[in-house]
Image (tube, rainbow, N blue to C red):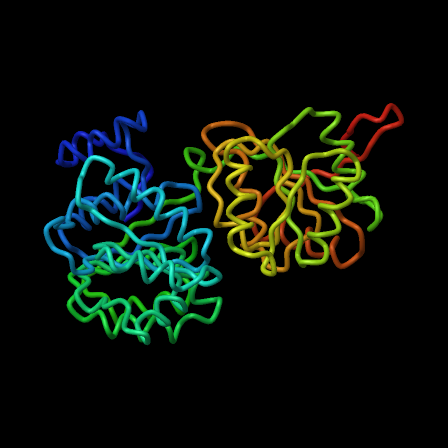
Length: 385
């Protein structure tokens, strides 16, 4: 069923403790995906939800999970699998927000790149909710530091991305172990063949929720493209920031080397920039992301590892320093801006012919208008043609 509108949270029969947490966030009306998913998940029904990034999926499954948790029971009652450590951390933070007024509800986050001993200590506190990347959860199960066979709810967040990244065998092994589950939630921006296979094998009579990227929830993002020399990308970013005065910016690169270079060149131009990629220790990644979330960092440069993992509602502008290889990555990158009903800006820097071909293909396949611009003689940005 397709959902285009939200409903009032106070119409969903939620507990006073959950309503308190929602009111603290100053929320009154759900997003469409929350309107579609909360009632069936509260009724222990399987759910398969197709919804764009940034539409409130964590609350859509998090609220029913917190409502169902028995604080007196020390067994694992819910497992949420996420493709990246950044997304796992973000989910855990949101769940802690929702459960703020439910004492005794404990949540743990398990991911690679963090010392396993610290996570083992957290597991000794007997959390009822486990948020994890599939690889690290498998590690803990092999060490027998966690048992998830008692889980009643299992959620795969960004299921398409997780299965694309090669986690399908980890995921199916984990689902086979969690055979006492009462419901399984699949949340995905796209319903790929692999997601359909998981649904067919592991779900029964699932509620199907679709949220189209219509005018209500589609971000308002002005998209531009600019031809630049390979070695002038940092200069162009600096000039655009100087002209616009924007001070919450994300810049995406395809490689670790490109990320380091752009970050260094921006710093040389006196711009407050930091970067993250796969070779940077997890603790440092979290420090950089926290600086950016708190508004203490102007430019956050990253590979796609953070495209879905950081949830900041007020990014002014996104730069594609390299055009991404996948159309979906473009959508996720630019989706960091234009949130919370604000207009966003995305600029793709085109340095060679293959990049030009890719941006043309992205514009056609994603049905986005990407307007060519250049610096005019007066140094101001102007639309070509």
